[in-house]
Amino acid sequence: MILVKNKHILTTALPVTSREYKILLNSKKFHNIENGVEGFCSEFKKILDVLEGNFIEYEETIKRKTWYLDTRKSELQKKSYVLRIRKEQGSNKKFKITLKFRDPDRYLSASKDITASKKYKHKFEEDILPPFTPQYSHSVSINKKISPPLRNINDAIRMFPCIGELNLDENSELISPKKFIAFETTCWIGAFDFENNDGSIKACLNFWHNSAKRNGIPLIAEFSFDYDSIEVNENEIEKFKLINISKSKELFLRMQKMSAWIDASPSKTKTQLAYNII
Image 1: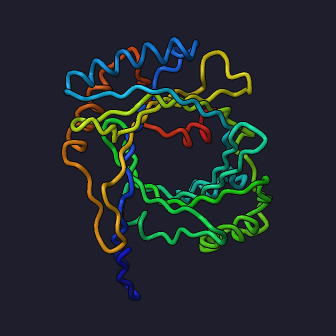
Image 2: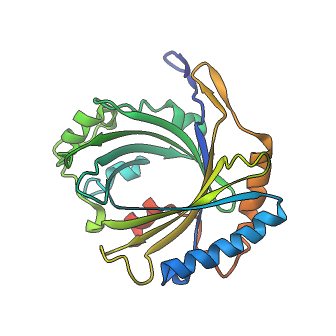
């Protein structure tokens, strides 16, 4: 990261590590997940063929629970922060705690001092939502073997010191908004590319249910695909293949015309839906 700072100016060059394209789907098409995935993949590959893309099919399914923590007044969300916890299925799986700041302004997002007190993984990513709207996500994640003690803002500050800069009441209780827990199923369907058969673009379907049985119509169905930068160096801007950039944009725009499969609601994220709709 290249940082120039004085009393009046703060400029940051933070490399984007990946670009992820996200689109919400018509969840009714996935009443039966297996049939829905098969039908969607068939239509998706037709569009990919038109763009002369190469598809490498494979299947991998991950199940986990996902929930968010915030004050009763949703003060973190109002400041564009998200505190999320994920627990993969199985007794030996770890808890993954993520603090994320998201903003459409790349430099505002990059300027945030997102750090953690323990060993963490840092990311700076670009999310692209319909019709073609970028959001820059600056995050850190910590893995823990046991459920994290996050009872109030003070606990959150001990884990993520940057939360202290928000000047929130440290005694404010942290709760799961609307007591919502997503029973999440992520289906990796394969990878694709537009040259060299390197499968550099990964694709998955993600479903949220409100019970561990994970049956019936999902609350949320989402398709996403992403690719990483070729090279990320803290002293150098990121690099992406131009063909991936241009063809992925065309693919994303064409997918939005799959009227039977696409959720016609205004552009949203799963986080927003968890806070505002569910």
